[in-house]
Structure formats: C-alpha cells, structure tokens
Amino acid sequence: MTRGWTLTEMIVMLVLLGSLTMMVIPSLGGWPDRWAVRRARHEAAGFFRLARLGAMVQAAPVRLSFTVDSLTAVLELPAGDSTLLRREGPGRHGVSLQVTRATIRIAPTGLGSGNANTTLVFHRGQAVDSLVVSRLGRLRIGYP
Image 1: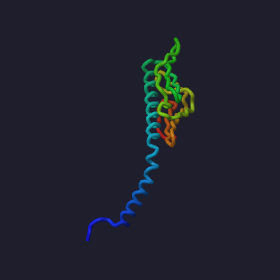
Image 2: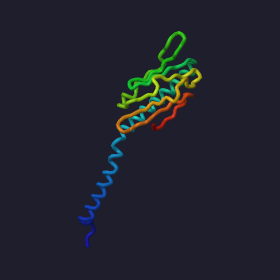
Image 3: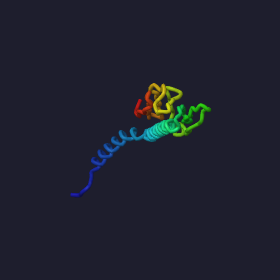
Image 4: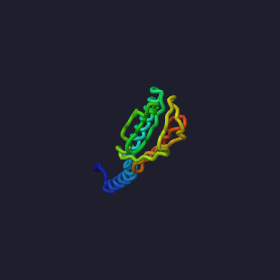
C-alpha cells in the first residue's frame, strides 16, 4: 500500500479549487476603484473640516466649491474675497464627482448656511460613495 492521492482525487480537488477561485476573483477585481473612491471621499471630508475650522478661526464666512478638478475654500471678507484653501479634486484619483449644490457656505460660527443636505457622490467603476453636508454643517459619510 502506497501513500498519496489518486488521479480522481486530484481532479476533484482541482475542480473545487478552480470553482472557489472563480467565485472570489470578481469580488477582488474592484478593490482599486473602492480604494480610490474612499481616498477621494476622505480628502473631501478633511478639506471641509479644515475650511470649517478656518471660518471659525478667521470669524468670517467661507464659500466652498467642489469640482472634479479642485476643492476651493474662499473667505468672504468685507474688503474682498480671499482664498483660504485650494486642493486638487478627486479627478486626480480617476474619481468622478456629482454635487447637488454648486457651492456650500459656512458661517463664522462653523454652522452651515443654506446647505440643505448637499450631497457629494464619488464614483469610479463599480465603486460609489457619498458625503452629505447637513444644514448645520455636519458631515455624514456613507453610501448613496
């Protein structure tokens, strides 16, 4: 009696291994898109938080603009507007952006000013994620 596997056992094992591999591969295929979307969402959330802090520190309203190419925060001062922050947009990660409102305003108190649940939707491939700014200037991160 020799130890080892028969040809039939080897074939059954390879078929099972191949079947499991075919089920796992499609779920792994979208991870670069999910990471890019998540990174873009986190950058936009961080940008919003910095702009909100800037409004409170400068005691002046801030106007935010989110586009695919850039994220811009402008201080609205009586003497004229002044750029507070500017960053590259989610397009640098290959992520598209849809925004329900062109601009978001933050009052000097840090509260939102007429934002009315502005939603930013980040999309790349099959990956989709969102960032919602409430009327009070709070962020909610989640899926649309």
